[in-house]
Image 1 (cartoon, rainbow, N blue to C red):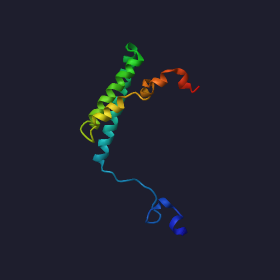
Image 2 (cartoon, rainbow, N blue to C red; image 1 turned 135 degrees about the horizontal axis):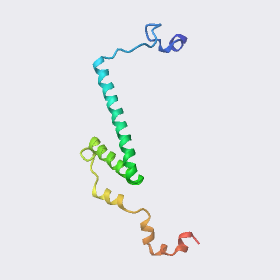
Image 3 (cartoon, helix red, strand yellow; image 1 turned 90 degrees about the horizontal axis):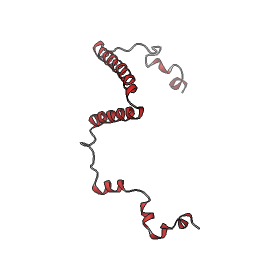
Image 4 (tube, rainbow, N blue to C red; image 1 turned 90 degrees about the vertical axis):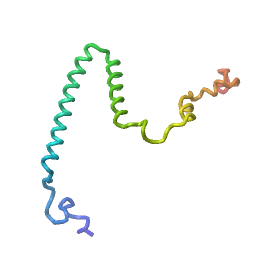
Length: 118
């Protein structure tokens, strides 16, 4: 039992190998390095532009525009309207109803003393 669970777990089936460098094709690695550098550049440009934009626009408006832009791109990438089951008309109406509104329509509950439970 000790041989099965003891010893160097990372040594591998050969015995004393250990972890070493992994062979990765250089073309594949280069593609990811270029992509990483491109995203870092875009992040730097975005921070620079947002700093200049915040001098002219209020923070609340800036965050609203930022969230609106990211939501737009997420809708483009995820395509939520073209896949999955559709929502029925009954489900849309049910989600728009205000919870608890039915109780205040009742004539007995219009008296605030009855809401407290006196």
